[in-house]
Length: 327
Ligand SMILES: O=CC(=O)O
Image (tube, rainbow, N blue to C red):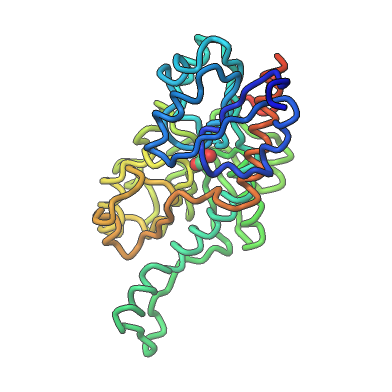
C-alpha cells in the first residue's frame, strides 16, 4: 500500500520502461508523468511537489524551477543518460542533492551506432542512396563511388572513455592499424596495448587520423573546438564522426569543409540544433550521414538505464553514494 511506503519518486518522462523501475516499488510510491514533452513541464512542476527523488528521463532542462517546485525533501536525482548538460549541476550541488547518470549502460549501443556511422560515411551510403533515387546508378565505371578503407587505417578519438574504447574494440575486427587519442589523462597502459593506442596532442590527432571520432562531453573547452582551423589540419581523405554533442563542432565550418571536400565525409548522431530542421544546408550534402541522436536508442539500453537510474536514486534515498554518480 502506497501509504506505507516511505518515499515518493517522480518518473518525469512517459517512456521509461516499467521493467527498469520495478525495483523502486518496494520502498517507493511511484508518480508517473503522463503528458509528452514539452507539454509535460506544468505536470512535472505539479507532480514533483513533495517528491523525494526524481528520474529525469528526457532532454528538457532540470533547473532551480524544478527543484523549488519539489521542495527541500528532494534527496536524489538521476538521469537516464550519459550527458548531463540539460541539468543545472551547480544548482544541485548548491542544494547538496546527489545526481546520478547512466553512462556505462549506453556504451554498447552508442559504440555500435558509431561504427555504423563510420562505415556509412566512409562508404558513401548517403550519396549512393541518392544516386539510386535519381536513376543515376553507374555500372560502367570501376571507380564509381569508391570509399575510404577502414582496414589499415589510423583511427583517432577525441575522448577515449568507455564509448571510445568500445568503438576501438569493435574496429579491431576491421583490421585497423592503430589508435590515437586525445584526452586530459592518459588511459591505462594495458588499454593502450590492447588497441595499439597512443595519446597525442590535438594537432597530431587532426593531422594523422583517417577516421576521427568525437566521443567526449560538451564543456566550455570543447564548445566549437572542431572549427575551420581544425578541419584545415585534417587529411582530405578523413572522415569525421560525432557521437558526443553537436555543439563540439562548428556546424557552419563543417558544412564548408564537407562542401569544398576539405575533408572526405562526416557521420553525425548529434547536431546543432536538435532537432535539425529538414531544410538545414547540411542535409543538402552527399557526404554527410546523419541519424537523429539515436545512439542509445535500443530497447535493452533503455531498460538498463532505467534500472541503473532507479538503483542510483535508491542509494541516494538511503543516504549512500550513488552507484553511478554524475559528480
Ligand atoms: O546522448 C545521449 C546521452 O548523453 O545519454
